[in-house]
Amino acid sequence: MLYLDKPPVLIETRVFSRMPAEFRKSGEVPSWAVANKAGQPVESFIEGPSFDADGRLYIVDIPYGRIFRITPEGEWTLVAQYDGEPNGLKFHPDGRILIADYRRGVMQLDPHNGRVTPLLTSRNGESFKGVNDLAIASNGDIYFTDQGQTGLHDPSGRVFRLSANGRLDCLLDRGVSPNGLVLDAAERVLFVAMTRDNAIWRVPLLPDGGVAKVGRFCSMFGTSGPDGLAMDEAGNLYVAHASLGHVLVFAPNGEWIARIKSCAGTTVTNMAFGGPQRRQLFITESLTGTVLVAEVEHAGMRLPRLPAST
Image (cartoon, rainbow, N blue to C red):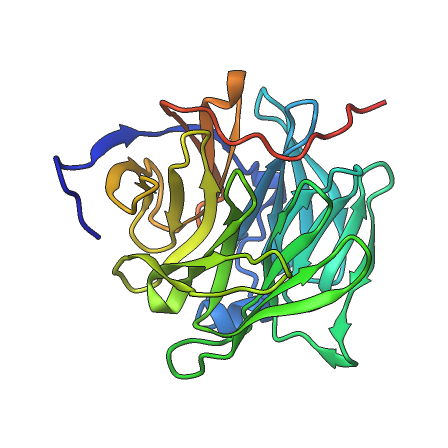
């Protein structure tokens, strides 16, 4: 990381809402924790924040297969619980709620009855390594990362695009733990967090559907790495870093311009813009089960339009 003209601006956070005690799994060691938390007990591990048309925040709880909805007043409701490991969640322009599930692939949720059903579970009959997160284009194309346990020792993580017509294309197959991803406003560039490379890769999208000249947009440090990504209307990239306790903000040219500091733990994993004029950033601090909020200068990039609830 570097800054060119002046040190990055420090932005403070405050607690928006904490997972209520009734939903915490004290003393339990789910199978997810064996591979990801050295077999230690975990109460929860929240991720995948995304707002519906009514300003309610949806989040996932990876190890216990749960989807929660949080009101603007901070009240939690369990929407769904199923046999899976939901990692990312996004709203599709057609109204579906899509889930990136580490064990089961890309799933879809009906928020009215809590039913979770498969959308895409394999490629050419072969299971995915471990789907992590999603980004959805205005035309309905779904981009998602297939992270699994890849890293510098095994740079075989993948990035896919599931087109609205049902075609599945592998855009990258040598990723170093591909995680969060976001499209730029013109949808001509895909940014991908490569967690174990501690870097953000910039992936230009070609008119023929391919990619070219993929490069590192910025690099970081730490015991983990960049996780969820978001972008504001000025083209600034927001990077949740899963071990530094910050969201790092980079200008369109890669200059480090701001840091948003967690007031809870250091496991900052993902974020979503919300609130009035999308000028608030809601951040998941996963280990403490806390959703943080920060006031930011620029509005979050407008996502594909969502239908209002009925």
